[in-house]
Amino acid sequence: MAEALRSEKRAMLRQSTDRQSAPRDEGGPRRIQFCRATSFARAARWHRERLNMHFKIVPAIGPRYWVSIMIASICGANMGDFIPDVLKLSDLGGLLMLALIFAVIALANQWSRRGNEALYWLAILVVRAAATNLADLGIHRTHLDYVTVSACLAALLVAILALRRASSLQPVKCGLPPTNGLYWLAMLTAGTLGTVLGDGIGHMIHPITVGVPISAIIATGAVALILAQKTRLDMASAGAASYWAAIVAIRTWGTNFGDIAAFFLSLPVSMMLSGLLLAGTLIVWREPSNPIIPAAT
Image (tube, rainbow, N blue to C red):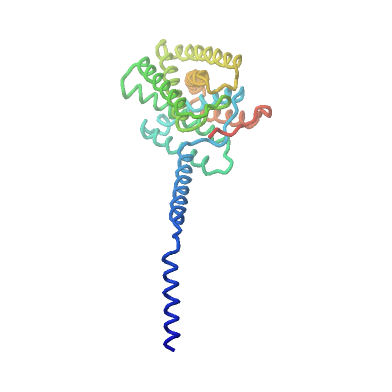
């Protein structure tokens, strides 16, 4: 009996010695750390994609796009005037409301599976309305002249475009520029610049009932020249500076024609009719040979 106990004890000691002398698997903790790092990287990439605000479906560059932008410029200009004149909101209150609406649109785009082109155009209208309010805020609150404000906005737009180009790893050669945060900031700045230019030219010529139509004629000529140049070169080359020059000119044109339409039709009617015209244009006018393309990411 004692011999059996001694044999069992020796066997237990042998097993303990074997476990201590066996090589340790040090790969387990490393694998855990690698999995954690991978999960963190995926989460960071997911949040970064959300913050970039890339719209999943954007319109193709072509005649339909430019006509729609022109109609949206009129409607957005009327929306910007509608907020303080009819809703009686302050400049800051109106901008806050528009910022919340834009955030809802951006979130709807991010959380939708396939996206929708209508979200892009809704964002364009909101940014255009905000540009109108920002232009009024910049002129009335700062008490600066139109030339000074225009020069500051032009310099800011150039800086934003330079930053976009420097931060872009794969520049888009055709189609709409990537609709990230810098794109919408440039769109807001270009819209504000166009509004200041339209109001400035219209107010420089007296009386204003003559100055605004003259400003509209000048803006129409500028838009025609820029778009004709783009057509001669390449209508799809939206990444060039001519795209933003056309946006500024169209914003100027839309500011003047929005004021003219509101003068003859009243502000609410002009805003409603231009909005319906934009919706009808986007629904009826289709371009099978130049389809809607997904935004670059």
